[in-house]
Length: 187
Image (cartoon, rainbow, N blue to C red; front, side, top):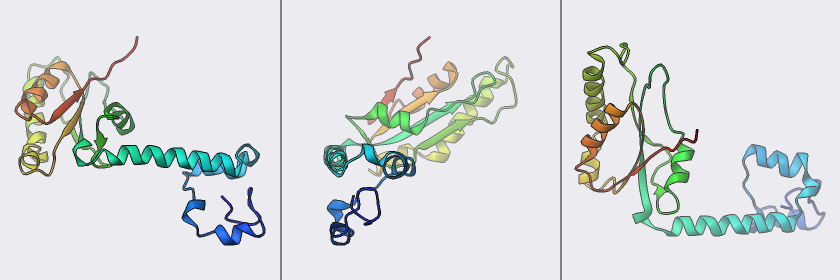
């Protein structure tokens, strides 16, 4: 907060003393850094920033103290609906899981069924897409990491035509460590 003597909250004596003190460090993303130190520095006093830092550290402590059992791997399933490709953003998945579960990894397991060049009205479409889904499930080998304990829990987010969601559910049905989340859309 007092890193540079010439900075927004700089001090000729304190800046040098506190420049490497971890209590004085606040890591920010680029947009927040611009807001706080360049665009509106008068809006954020050192006391305000300390309070923000303390609140964030308390939040992080609560989330991280939940322990290993709260960790869940995000599994995103998506398929084309009509002419639209679908996906649920990872940040929405994370928000939906918390506070009972926390992401076990920053990278979700993604199963995407996008290979068919047929319209969903074509008689071969569903047979081909179900086969494609089963192949994707085999490629990702979801059951094996659960059986050996590499994955302890899955948080499943699916967005696709209903017949594929039904097959996806059937393929996951014998995995007990799963929470399924449904996307709710308001009209």
